[in-house]
Image 1 (tube, rainbow, N blue to C red):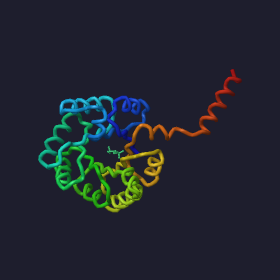
Image 2: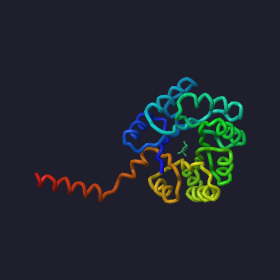
Image 3: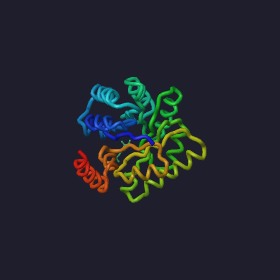
Image 4: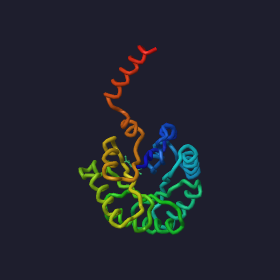
Length: 217
Ligand code: E4P
């Protein structure tokens, strides 16, 4: 299972990279805006910096929504660094853009996936990743994990190589449940990844070992 961090914050990306368990980064326009990045040049430079900090696939989302604009923008994003994955929204023109990039050998991530049908279409168009948004489904009382299971079943039935990138992760339990149902990747805020570390018995057990270690020297 791959671990991506879902942020445009450079300090958090560095911290996750330093942990040694990071396989990639995802961003979106909202996460870029949160970091105060604006203007084409600044956005391009920010992606370049992220690629220099983190190893693995770095998703960079197009800001446009027409086929012609998305392929122009995606080509420019892909030229920044070999690790850039062009992130395309799940719309009709997006499907055409996924096919264009797939034929060109440029990696893609189809975002804003909320149904199994959307995931099927994205796979048919040759997307490398699909991003079902777990947390946003849970937010409206729809079981996001059920969607991950459905996509897993469909992709396994037909041996689609598209990877399921579970997104909109809100908690460590989301990560654990994604691992149980076979999501290929999770993209998560750093806080949920770090929460996986914690257990009170680990803390009390270590405190006891440290205390007893002192008796040994
Ligand atoms: C996915 O690639 C998105 O960047 C992200 O996971 C959305 O998460 P949110 O619902 O917390 O905004």
